[in-house]
Length: 274
Image 1 (spheres, rainbow, N blue to C red):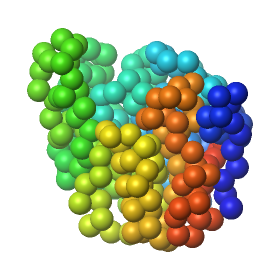
Image 2 (image 1 turned 90 degrees about the vertical axis):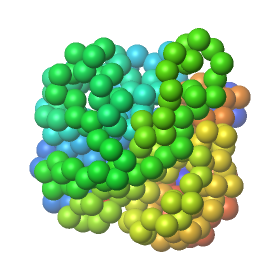
Image 3 (image 1 turned 60 degrees about the vertical axis):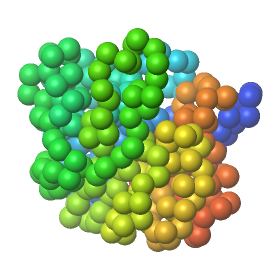
Image 4 (image 1 turned 135 degrees about the vertical axis):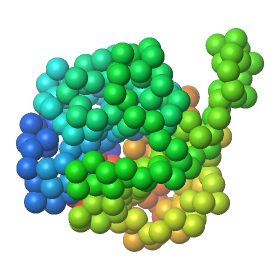
């Protein structure tokens, strides 16, 4: 079984370790590898095309259990920086400040790209519609739908100043020369998920939370695509044992899915090849 974890003093599942992300992860490659950067953060290297998605390397407002595998100042130039939505465990502004001048392109939904331009001085941030395609090097990206506009249901003045629309949140379907990768991102279960083509790898948020897929929804999705590699993300990095978006347990997931050997709980900084 690919699941190897450790546990905090409170029993929260944690990655077994953090390994330093090597500079070679940003260099030439003969294949496609996805590196876990912690929480929902990913680095995809597809035959030398390098894309970071939702990196949270510094600047989070909650205590963490494990250090990041690389700091922004140590990241070399790379091809593109992508965001799925505005939440600060995905759109990490301090991390963005350290990466924006190293990224060849920056992509997101229209709302997140506008925030990046207006508030974070990212003048070239490119916004997209759900369903839209764009290419970065050898990778073709398609924005996939999600349902994660939890802010729209809050009563605090922090959130009621605007309408939070579902189109402001997305996942990504990635077509690479070596196969397909799907990042559903944070989302409640959607019928469209079960209508997707079979991906070779799913970057799998299995958080048991009402604004995420929920554990039952995660098991249903995993078993609907019984041959996809499941790279578990959004777990084990934030010290919040009672906060369901961050306390998923890959061992519990592996016990419920078909072909459990395809459930991967990587060390931070470790890569999984297509």
